[in-house]
Length: 112
Length: 111
Image 1 (cartoon, rainbow over the protein chains, first blue to last red):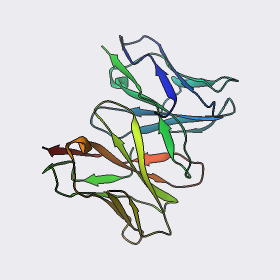
Image 2 (image 1 turned 135 degrees about the vertical axis):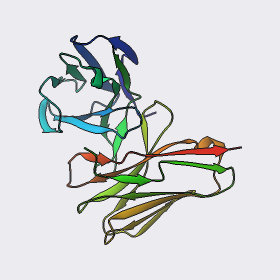
Image 3 (image 1 turned 180 degrees about the horizontal axis):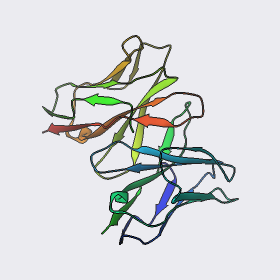
Image 4 (image 1 turned 60 degrees about the vertical axis):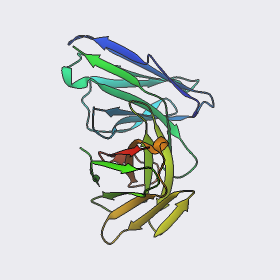
């Protein structure tokens, strides 16, 4: 158990809709990262938040946005959903080693 | 896009056998990590090897790193059915930066 909780675990949306995914940790870390994992692929970095500000972003369009709250919980928002957005979305907090991550169990998004 | 490549993409062995997975990457790294993922679930950190280390052990896991060849291998000895999972290598290029994951090796250990 990493103490990282994500919700919802599964959801289905249709193209063009918007979705919000949530992440929280028991220990309240000031850094949180989000990754997208398509079926059969490794996770891809979306962005990272540090003390409520985005401080790193992968190759994802602006319709992927995030928030980090004072209690260090976090949200990933995706607007104008596309079929290719179907994936497992993973939230992660820092582990003990440099760059090491503790992941949540993910939110499985299906876009129809 | 992912910069790591892993092989094999899939590996099927019998319980008790050893499993070896390989990972290659493209640029200089700070460290390399291996993660395990049970079907459709979150990733679990297994082991980290720094760029100035050549080999590291943790229980039944042995990781090697060859920075001249930009490659790493993960060996699982005396495999068990419970080791069935996908295994990913991930590289860290600068302190505090993002992890770049390979596409993974799907390991199946048959009882």
